[in-house]
Image 1 (cartoon, rainbow, N blue to C red):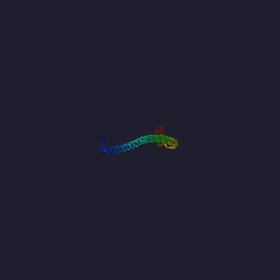
Image 2: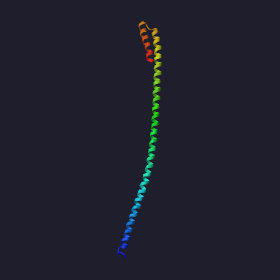
Image 3: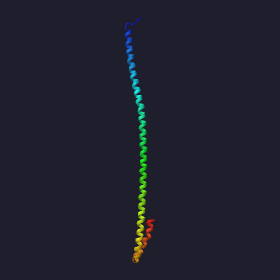
Image 4: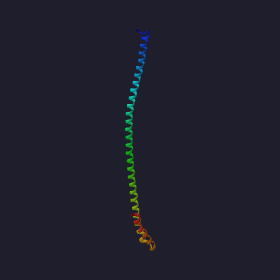
Length: 123
């Protein structure tokens, strides 16, 4: 026995199923797109992390070179200052010796005292 509206009901059900299938296909496409984007994002994140690590290492190397240059310059300046000071003290000591030999009694004793201090300052 056939239902009077049976054929129409089947057609409506088929149309409904067709719409459901289209929605499922769309959802699958969206899911595939989402998965592809997530995969691409992971790759981009890995690349960005690698670039960031390279930048950090590069920055550390530059800072290391700057510190080495500063230390080298400090040593050079300290050496120059020490060398110049010793040279000046030596010249002063020689000049004091000359003046001491020519100075009268009291002044000569004062110059002797100053000359005795020179090794304390330079040494």
